[in-house]
Length: 251
Image (cartoon, rainbow, N blue to C red; front, side, top):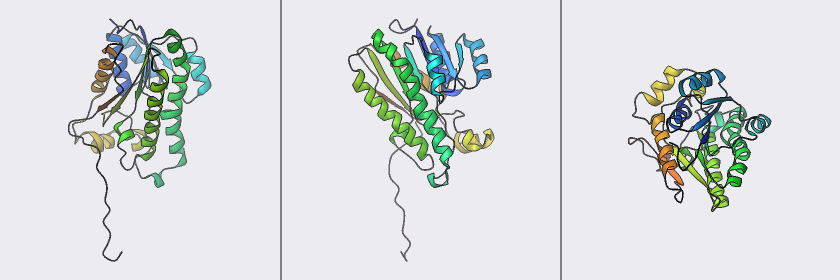
């Protein structure tokens, strides 16, 4: 049974990790789910497993987004798609790293939301989810481009909440800490073993199902309640603090 009479959902970045977990959970909840991602083959597998509607889509292509989403009545939009192209100091990153992360993490999200939000407002009902990251609120070194894009989404969610107050459309941001997914795989040149050894194996990290559980909890709240910002971190991960660089005696 769906929440509050909602029937339809669209999840971006649905082919793996958090997105795929959310598709599975929403389908179990009774939603008709459109699963959008670039990987058509992975989406086909997910469709056979869950009964979702696969939608191969590159959200960085604005015209393709408009064409694919035109006329869709979506009650729940989960803006989950995201990439990390580099884990290194900003001055070592290329402008291609900058452009790709902005295109997917920020501009693509804006395009999808722009296509579907008017219908929600016209119907006076709906729930928008923005998947950001703790890094949007607590930046750390070597992922500053990713942090900047996610901070932009955080500001967008805050602004939309002001614009949509009283409209019947809720806006929730979920900001996870380290999650055991493949989002960093490109930054590790596709070396899954190196990625796991560096970021996951030594730690107790979040799992995609943990993040999906936060989505379901926010959806289930009464309609007069909005989970504005959910910070979700492993119990072993702490954020914040500062860096103080020591000076040499000769300086």
